[in-house]
Amino acid sequence: MNAYNNFAKLYDTLMDNVDYNRWYKYIKEILNKYRYEPKTVLEMACGTGSLTKFLCEDDYDITCFDLSEEMLSVAYDKLRKYKNCEILNQDMTNFDLNKKYDLILCLCDSLNYITDREDLINTFNNVYNHLNEDGMFIFDINSYYKLNNIIANNTFVEDREEIYYIWDNFYDDENDQCEFYLTFFVKEAEKYLRFDENHIQKAYKTNEIIEVLKSSEFKNIDVYEGFTFNSINETSERINFIATK
Image (cartoon, rainbow, N blue to C red; front, side, top):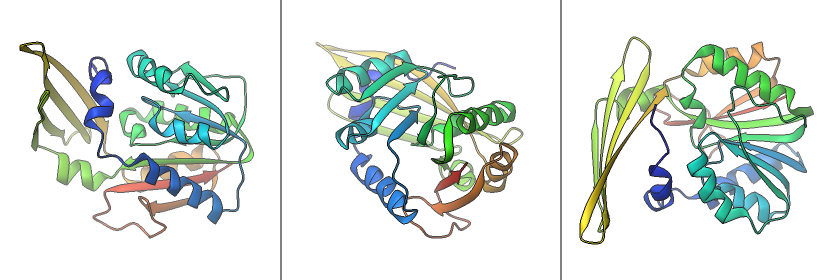
């Protein structure tokens, strides 16, 4: 899968509609609701570090990692001034950091990129093994409904002054996977340069995620509609999970 390579340089520009401040406030609301005060935090699939920056500024002891070296290069430029942040190149399906954390985060539907059930089991086992006792795991997914009904088999086009891209999506019913094919045209000097990326996200049903969390021995699993504490429904597009060890 060719993902987050050249796209890394454009990621922050094209994701300027994502309100990371809101996302961070929601995490703080969760911590307040559960009366939990973590000191050490691990952020998996940190991308370019936009959310990590808020954690750093709130003086947590942060470790963050991503699989994409290109994304981490952007994150490093953004985070290198913070002394309380360690940046690593790791895969969430097999990481081993020899350290435990109070809180582990995996946000922005990063878990949907794990398309194999055994890899999902390994990831949740890794998280469990890296949490302190009573530690908390917070993550979200694009819902089965969103990938199957909103994104699937649709094409999205965006035309900006310096960047034009086409996002074609195809849904694989047999494997419940949504394949994203992105074509970018980026203006440099007097011409446009083209590059392509393809991404695959797995459409998980909520009960599948809960089943794997339980198999990894997580307890007190709560599920909410994204950015809220409301119960999910058939048309919820983002689903947030909170699990404790």
